[in-house]
Structure formats: C-alpha cells, structure tokens
Length: 234
Image 1 (cartoon, helix red, strand yellow):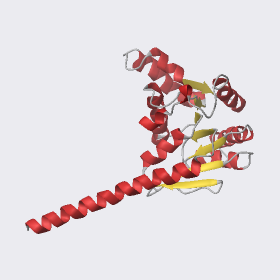
Image 2 (cartoon, rainbow, N blue to C red):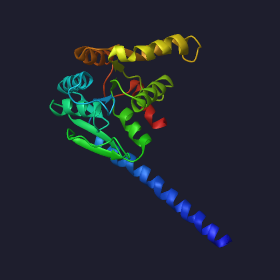
Image 3 (cartoon, rainbow, N blue to C red):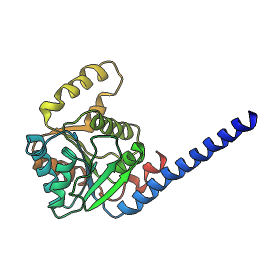
Image 4 (cartoon, rainbow, N blue to C red):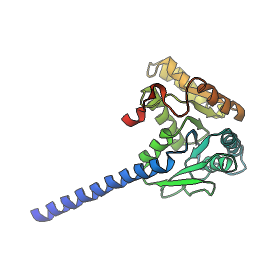
C-alpha cells in the first residue's frame, strides 16, 4: 500500500512539473511572437456583443482609428467586442493581434487576426495584454472585462507597471461603477482620491486616440519612465 501511495505522489509531482513547463512555454512563445508589435493598445469588452450593435460598431471604429494612427491593436481574439476590435484593426494600417484563450464555451477565434496566439492559462494571457500595451481601452463587458480592468488598475496603482492611459468608453455604461469608486472606495479610504485619476471616461473615437497621444507627449511609447521595465517584477 505504501509503495502505491508513493508511486501516486511521484506521478502527481511529474504532472505538476510538466504543467509548469507548459506555462513557461506559453510565456516564451507569446513574448517571442509579440516582441516587435509596439506601440499597441489593448481593447477589452464583452464576448456577447453582437455584430451591428452600437457597442460593436463603436469598437470597430475606435480600433480602425487607432490602427491607422500607428497602433497595433490587441484583443482577446474571440467574438463580440474582441472581434470588433480585431476587425477594425485588420482593415487598418497596423497589426491586429488576438490573444485567444481555450474555454469550454463562448471563446471561438475570430478571423480578423494578423497574429493569433492561443493560451491555456488566463494569467499568462493577462500578462501579455499588459506587457505590450501602451494604453487600455475598455468597452462595455462582464466579469472578464472587469477582471482585466481591475488587473490594470492594481498594477499601475502599486507601481508594478508603468502608468498608461486606461480609457473607459461608453460613459453611461460605466458611470455607476465610477460613482461607486468615488462614493464608497474613496470615502471609506479603500483607495486614494488621486487613484481616480488613473481612469478616463471618453465616448468619442477621435478623443480616445488624442488622449493616448497626449499622455505620451513627454515620454516614449517604447521606453518605460526611468528606462526600467517594472513588469519584470510582477
């Protein structure tokens, strides 16, 4: 009996070792494929948004404008807002990148990707969204979109990554969340009042691009402030 238990333990340790190697390979492969795409903007939003709807068309317009302005566009590579972002960039002048995730449902790769990279692990994928982004554009979405938004806010707030523009589009959709941040989180001193400056609410596509360019008037898209790469310390 003891020998059988020990054999099971060794088998479990071996599987875990191979799993870790698989995670490492995702980081290495994605970093190698995406290394040359900067400057880029990551766009997030719901996978459930149908083509032809206002959110979809607005996303496509923003992505096309950013692409024609010289930004590669990174999305989650799936349907909905992700597809709209890839589609707008695909028909623009700069690369359209999809960081796909393997899921039991919902996620199917859209056809508008110049570069498509598939992940098994959310955290490896999330790292790449931040690692190569000069700005975040957040469209209406659900839990996954909120997860990406909070990840970016946390990394910037804690100085684990350089400050980049975080732009929420469709102010009517986001207003309740922003009000709760101010009226509850700030009031209860869960965040500092100045943390609200990390977020911009912008509805017009041209204003989105202008806000990103304005942020970088005194710094480079390619070199973090101070010349260091804080993402190495994540």
